[in-house]
Length: 166
Image (cartoon, rainbow, N blue to C red; front, side, top):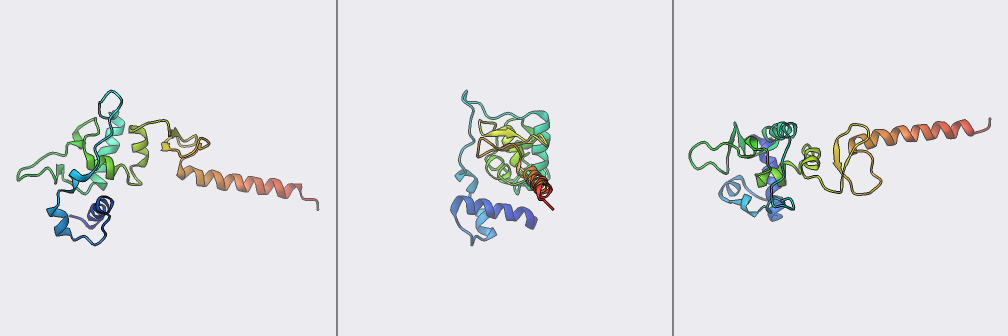
């Protein structure tokens, strides 16, 4: 398992157990995915659904981020034979690991906001990506907010300098 993917696995175990000194042999022996909370369901009891573009983005995330993905197969579901990753072939959010680890990663935040849309989900006025808002006044995602703030400060400083008498 590549070191990059192994790092995410340790983050998950730290999230579940609060432990930091875990060895890889302990990781393989524990059935830690069962300890993850269940996937949230909609009010009618169905799982969250993805559009085709969201599914393509989720498959890219799974290939790049998921530590359980191995050339199309799911490592925890492997019982000797090949077992295809359920999340990569489904339009519903079915995998606990995908929901609680891959979507929580910084690369999966915007996809999480789109899939699990609720009243705190907003769309950035600049780049049109969705993001989770903690306030009612939020207009920009975190990436665009820095640029907008920098431009607003520069504009304010120019305006203030122009008012100064010489």
